[in-house]
Image 1: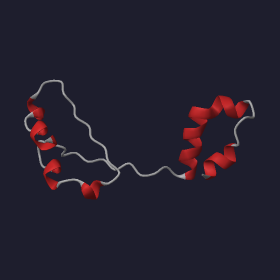
Image 2 (image 1 turned 90 degrees about the vertical axis):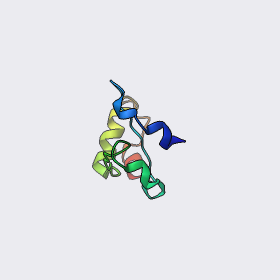
Image 3 (image 1 turned 180 degrees about the vertical axis):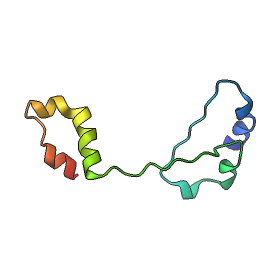
Image 4 (image 1 turned 90 degrees about the horizontal axis):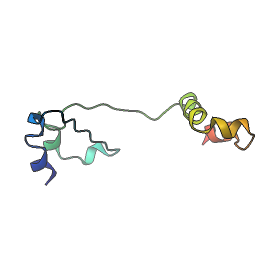
Length: 76
């Protein structure tokens, strides 16, 4: 059913379709054909430094109040 919905979507004005998965190997090859989901971007897992930055953005206020073990959270 998804394949039939994707047919012709690239002719619609002002429409951008984004799909995500963490199991690319399970996708039907027909989904990745031109005119469907043809652009693929791989986003790897963040490094330890990347996790630290993400936590700093989202939990910075808690960390400043001493309610968050920053090194422990980065290690997880």
